[in-house]
Structures are given as structure tokens and as C-alpha cells.
Length: 465
Ligand code: ADP
Ligand code: MG
Image 1: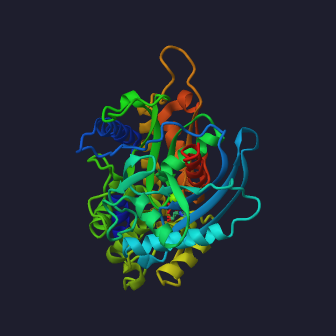
Image 2: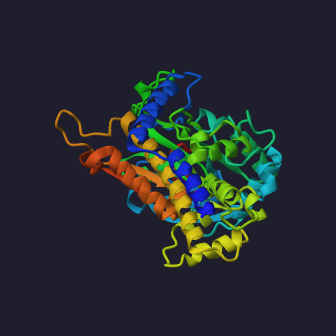
Image 3: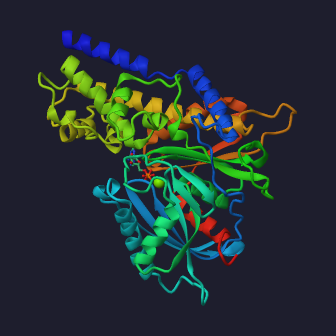
């Protein structure tokens, strides 16, 4: 009975510290909007970098020819080729390959990482079949999706600001990532030109727009989280170049680095951040994204093991190991709807090493998953709402005209596979928008839009175009 009381006390405290009432979400969204404005002014203290992508035109559907894309951003990287057939034929054929990055390369040297990538790309190019056509005398062209914050200097160049998501490669920060890749491709004897360097959010936006003309923003919920959207060029005071003909500029918000007193930061978040590769940074991302959710759950379960002997008299040593509980496992436990939570029990046995857990312990575990996932999903929805606010698509126009159909392209393994998470994002967004406005807003899964998006941007920025 004493154990139960202690468990209840911990759970109550967790519920309190992770709670995200709608009013709080609204004030977080307001804070994000004002940080967006600061970022667009170029205020160096802004929480949101609002990076200029140099993409002022999104795909139209007329893109034509053979293009490659390379997507580096998480534990896997992907290479892709696509034969584009213009307005009528659209995507004639595409092929891709996924290669996992050996963990030691994520914390090694820049040259090793880029050599590995270029070698895999060269191998992929070697398998190009008859269905793909490169006009005589032309160089192959590539869109490079690089999902880390980059100070873009043109559509096809930019320097890395910092690594995130578990990467900490020596010698890349401050370097031009396109020239790093190009040099590595040369070392592999691969003749290919990078014509577009894009963030994955920008690639997803481009890929989403190709399929649906009403896409105005893209959000990634995967290993990390980030968003990009279409801004009016004249709403970007820090843009000193010529106003683009389109009047628009895609902005990469880098919202993962958002930080605010308003964020419900618990002791578990603080400890995880402190022990991370990038303490004090990417706070919003650490509360939302796939790399971290399972780890937050682990920390709470560990607290319950210590304070309330959740897994028996001894604290299971496996549970002490950072990141043993991965978000896909958390998701599997959370979705267990069997009457005796059999799947959850098996996962606990697997991960924590405790064979016989009572039904009550399983319910507690599922409840913790629910709390952590729900907080992440609700915070993500507040972010999406803030972008809609920024571009004036959060409510029906006051002049009585109809609100235009507004589509958000979403991608990332967390959103794609964690059903309870994605449905919570959607219901929270509906709640924030209200019934009328939300009927014009669509959240759409843009599965792997970033790869095709990068290829499309490579096409529209081709040296032959
Ligand atoms: P990245 O963000 O690295 O480019 P993805 O978009 O494929 O790659 O996202 C991968 C991430 O998605 C994983 O790190 C994991 O956190 C999360 N994820 C993958 N599968 C699941 C799942 N079944 N349930 C919950 N999260 C998942
Ligand atoms: Mg990705």
C-alpha cells in the first residue's frame, strides 16, 4: 500500500509537470509567432533562426528530366533518382535506396562521413537502368537534402551552423556542406553537380506542393522536428537582396531550437538535456521528437522504480541505461489494447529485463507513454498553429470571404508510425483553430516528400534550365 501511495505521488507530479492546457498552448504559439518575427528581422537573440532557403519558387509540375537526390538527416540516409516527365507524365519512374549510417561515423570526422555518403551514392548511380535518360553531354544533377541548420548562401551552398540529433562530426561546423559533398564525390570519381541544397522541411514543402497546390507549410516529426513555410518576401526585413518575382520566399524556421519559459519543462527533461550532446539547445525538439520521447519515458519509469519499487525491490540495471527505451518501443507499448497488455509486458521483459510485471505496472507504464506522447503531440500542434497564425490562415477572414484551403505537409517516422501521436496532433490543431477555420485546414502525410522535393528543386535550379 505504501508503494502504491508513492507511485501515485510520482505519477501525479509527472501529470502536473507535463500538462499542456489549451490556454498554455495558445500562449506558446504566441511566443513562437513573436520569435518568428524577431528571426525574420535578423535579431541575433531570436529563438527561431528563420533561415532563408533561397527557394522563391516551388515546383510547378513542368519539371523534366533525370535528377538525383540525397537525404541526410537521421540514422539513415537515402539516395533517390527520378525521371520527371513534365506536366503530363509527372513522375515517370523513381528508385531509391536506404543506407544506415554506422554510428561511429555520426561522431567521427567530416571527411569520413562525406566519403561514406559519396561512396554509397556512386554505387547507386552505377545501377542506373535503361528507364532513366540523361541527355548526351550532360552532367548528372543532385538535390541535397541536409536536415541540419545551415546558413544558406545561395540555393546551392551553405555552411553548417551546428549538428543536432545525435550527430557531432568534427570539422563540418562552419564548412560549406555542398563543397564537402562535392569534394567527396570527386574523390569517388563521381561526376555529379549539386544544384540545390535544401533542408528536409523545404524538400517536403516542395514535394508536397508538387502534389497539392494548396500546401503552404511542411512539418517534420521524425528523429527531430522542424518546419518550413512560404513567407511573403516583403515580410522578411533581413532579406536585403532583390525581391523575388514570385513575391515569396520559403523560410526554414528551425523551430526545434525554440525555447521559452512557457514550455512545460520537467525535471526529466532538464536531466536529459543536461546529459545530451547539445545541452541547452533544441529544447522544443527534445520535448517532441522521436529521438527523445522514449528516453523521457525511461527516465520517468526509472524514477518510479527508485521511489516506488515499480519493478520490484531492486531497480533493474537495464533501465539505468540511457536510450534503451526507443520511441518505436514506446509506441508499441502505448498502442497495446489487449486486455492483459501482453505486448507491453513482453516489451518490458525485453527492454527492462523484468519478466513478470503485474497488470497494474503495465497500466502505469502505458499511462506514462500516454502522458509523454500527448505532451509532445500537443506542443507540435501549437507550433503548426503558430505558423498558421503567422501567415493569417488561423481564422476565417473578417471581410466575410471564405478561408482558402490550407494544406500542411507532414512527414517523419514519428508522425507516420505513431498513430496515437499523429491523431493527437490533429485533434489538438482542430481544437486550437476552432470548428470553422479547421474545416479549411488539412494535415496531409507527405510520405518521403523531401527526397522527391529535393530532386524537383534540383530540376528547377538545373545548370541547363
Ligand atoms: P529522420 O527523422 O531521421 O530523417 P524518419 O523520418 O524516418 O527519419 O524518422 C525516424 C524516427 O521516427 C525514428 O528515430 C523514431 O524516433 C521514429 N519512429 C520510427 N518508427 C516509429 C514507430 N513505429 N513509432 C514511433 N516512432 C517511430
Ligand atoms: Mg528525414
